[in-house]
Image 1 (cartoon, rainbow, N blue to C red):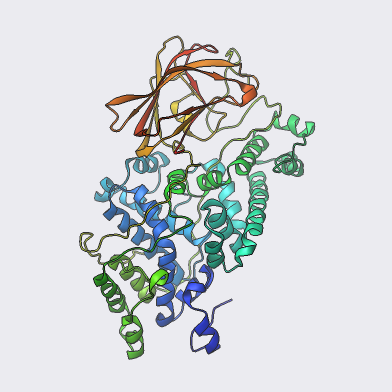
Image 2: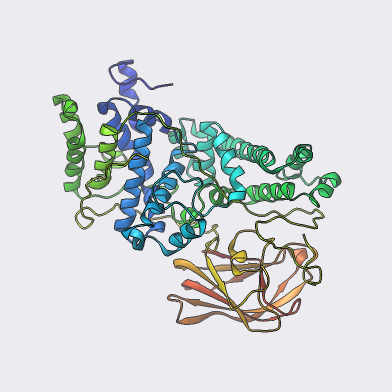
Length: 559
């Protein structure tokens, strides 16, 4: 339903419904209207989403100036789509983050390539993504075999998608979610639980339709029951079917991950590259207003007004745009470059209709007590039978004139780090050696069924990870596949850290660590409070279960 524009609806209602109280869907409708109505809505749209978009852009770039430019570009593309009548296939925050990736893809083929984060450039190259601006088929860093999750997300109602992204993935406060979605704050908890259930069911439907056989369809209800949170029922029929069906095994694995780690599983699937770091640093819960010098508060509205068509310059409109913007929490941050982009997008972008871009996503593992003799993955991960350690298994877009960063710095905020996010997921990993298909990247792919294994009979062996930037690491978790067929073993491991990859210091001395399948095959190593590092290296000198170093997952946390 379209929100009435001022002067076309009830005057009393128009006065009461200021843009700060409108949900995103209504803001978008106003942004498609007359300039006098669209401008305040665009300003509010930017105020709500710019801090998070800038946080992600900073992960994708090497400098604050490049981050501000990527964020501005994302808003340009979003507003352009809004004016054409295109709706976000997911949630608007999610859409803006994917547009940051799309802009980064275009940078990777020109002189701006050096402004991007090296890890992102490597990920773009590995994915074979297009080198010119065009709709991304899926977010960078996601895996094609998991496209069912993104398809499921897009199939849900708009409100459900918003609840999943803002309440579940970004974990924003109930009050913030209520404003963004136009619901009562008291209803957010119920909506969160309902959305969690809806995405699980939608994913299973999409996955079986994409990859399953007619036989798989008959097991859908059993899979739903077996993966229901808190449900410990077992089905021998399902277990027998899973022993020969990689499709249903993969579905169960993903559903267990969505139950155990919904934020990480969904962010990996819907955003891909940098999702874990984004969840750890995005300004969720509390979004401080961007602090801008008083002089900018005049410059930005002036830039907006200059970008409007001449017909829009009525005395009434000039008085409104020159008036002081909201105070306190309602202050509109006046970063000149982004404000000009918003204004130009609202004023001059065409209104033709196009279909929204199609995207896609990734997955992760389960913990299910079923008899599985073969496990699915995109690369071979099953161990040879002789192996004693396991038997498992477009139109050009106008470029805005930007003000130099030195004169109009990008807004700053204090990120709110999260301690429950694995900083190692999908980071660059290397090893002293590997055997067969058990490569180092297996230990940071989020899937405990895959693992890294070094060459046999050649200790010591090392495993190294680059976090991309320095972080305060307080806890390290090493895991092996949680399968009963893995015999208990002790691996002697030393932990070292480095800021530059050359000068190393001992973080934890060589210590025998006991891995027991009955305890999940995981070992936790607490680190000293002052452990700040970018590179981390594990040196293996012994393994009582197999004459090589073995590591299924390395997880790093800030607490």
